Image 1 (cartoon, rainbow, N blue to C red):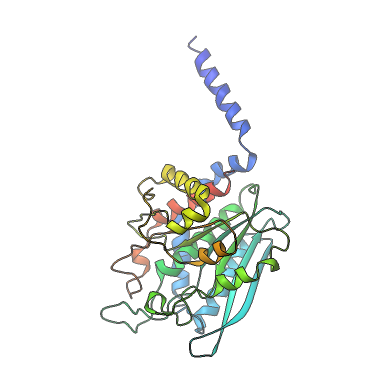
Image 2 (image 1 turned 135 degrees about the vertical axis):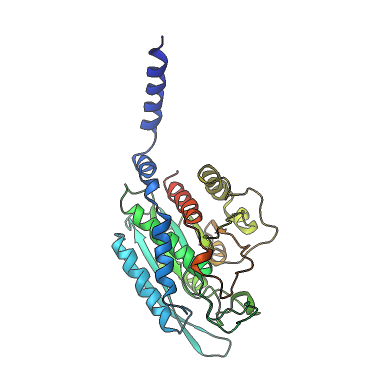
Length: 314
């Protein structure tokens, strides 16, 4: 009898393992390969291009950097969607969305998104409001999250669904001042949503998850109201996984206010979409102190490993 119960337990465990899909088992084997220090390295590289706002030399350098990193991660295609938007001064603003597609032949698609443009100046800085805004958390952190996730996916069995990593331009608005611009509106994601059939001619993506500001050392992620309305089952799934991986970082209590971000345009296009963000980033938010010193490899790993497991969870 002493041997019977361990064998029975082992048999049950084996049966459970066999019922799990091969890609999901591969994800569990690879999850610890998601490396927060590597992600911090991407943030450090992107900060070298500051300012990275539209029209600045660092903007194109960020585009080139993202495209090269995604190509190394064995994306089937790394595409750019170039267009112009009209600024408040009437001048044309050139923009570029970046779309890196994995398993491009798979008709089932998931969008994993963020923005890569940054605010041009640290308008909330009490001492230097006209200085360049580094954007380590508000811009570079979620780019790093996607780049590291793509790297780990390239080492694993592919999920049962195709993934489109989308790096939106112009999220900070036509003046690149974010909340400091009273006429703020995202630019890249609405354009992408308006031209959805370019990439999805017959079938919309099943869902989308958008990331922003995910490296805070005191990370606290709360469900966002419009996300709950648009993609309640997906929010529940993501937060359930996150609570297992990093319970201190995932709170079930929703934010008391909705947050507009790139997921908003995807929601309006009829794609169930949700936002993952820690919007409480005082006193560093949009100041010269939004630097890599405020970023945590552990926070990045908490979100990145949650995303990886989420992508393999039916």
